[in-house]
Amino acid sequence: MTTIALNVNRRAVELAAEPRTSLADFVRDKLDLTGTHLGCEHGVCGACTVLLDGVPARSCITYAAACEGADVTTIEGLDEDEITTELRAAFTREHALQCGYCTPGMLVSARDLVLRLPDADERRIRVGLSGNLCRCTGYVGIVRAVRSVIEARRARNVAPQAGGGRTSLGPVGSGRAAPGRSEPPPAQRALAPASQSAVPGSIADFTPATVLDQRFTLPHPPAKVFAMFGDIAGIAACLPGVSLTAPPRPERVEGLIRVRLGPIAAAFEGAARVERDPATLSGRIVGIGTDQRSHSATQGEIRYRLLPLEGGAATAVELSIGYTLTGMLAQVGRPGLVRDLARRLVADFAANLDRHMAGVPPGPGTPAELSFWSIASDVLRARIARILGRRSGAG
Image (cartoon, rainbow, N blue to C red; front, side):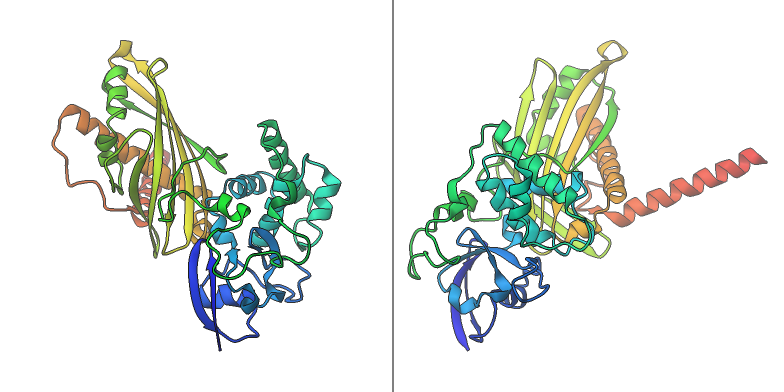
């Protein structure tokens, strides 16, 4: 057995392994990072692709012992990466995945192309992805997704990065410094957040994979509702499952939201920033969070607009809720289930907000977590009521 010390997803790791252990087996079996998939185990299919010192590498044919002192980033380590987030949304939008087995390696390779290519040249994208095989999609959606991200970034004047982080010629990892270096390579520094904790140092804009629209009314004037939306602690107290973990500031709110989907319980710890426009009585909340237990991550955006009703005596609150979910919960977070969860969350939030603004003492209290089972019971009761209503109408 050999003791191997390296950095995996910005975390120092020192574990014993056989000299013949591949990097793919090391991250999967030793660290439970199963997003790195094994396909051919000959370096042909690309399912095992990870970043080694910021450069894509085949982990199935790379010995873990040869990575002593290196920085390794698996697909799990890219949850907060801006380019990967845009690619995930594009893959969903362009139907660029089916079974998903090749997708982690495909995303790692695609990220490298987005970094390097000056424009969305289809031929160069196809050549760049030729080392990642897919048995499902036919590649059309994948190429379209990568092209759309490159086009969008170049339109935003995000310049390509020469070499995509490569600092020397030769095999991946051959040009890195000796073990124990104090500074990570430039590409890895770009991936690392300002804070090494679960709470990111900055909250970047993103393109949501899914957007849901919701609306509710409050029997209070728009100006009063808008003022309430500026009370961050008060709003958090009205949201089921939400708690603040630090004194809130508009530019940074740190907190926790607890969710239960069947047998899976998650506690997303993260941060958000709040934007408000008094002139239009509108605003936006952008946040990001991770659940360490399920290796899941989410990015969310809530846009709201307040409209006067009944001559200004009441307010219609229009919400646009966008999110991107990755990790284990993404496998069970089907769109229908998420829509039901969002409807329940908004309904409970509206009721709590109305009571808070009316000065009514809180009832039993905000639930400690959002529960799938409570949603399922509500849906079941609603369906039974509809069936009974149809039968009574027929009689």
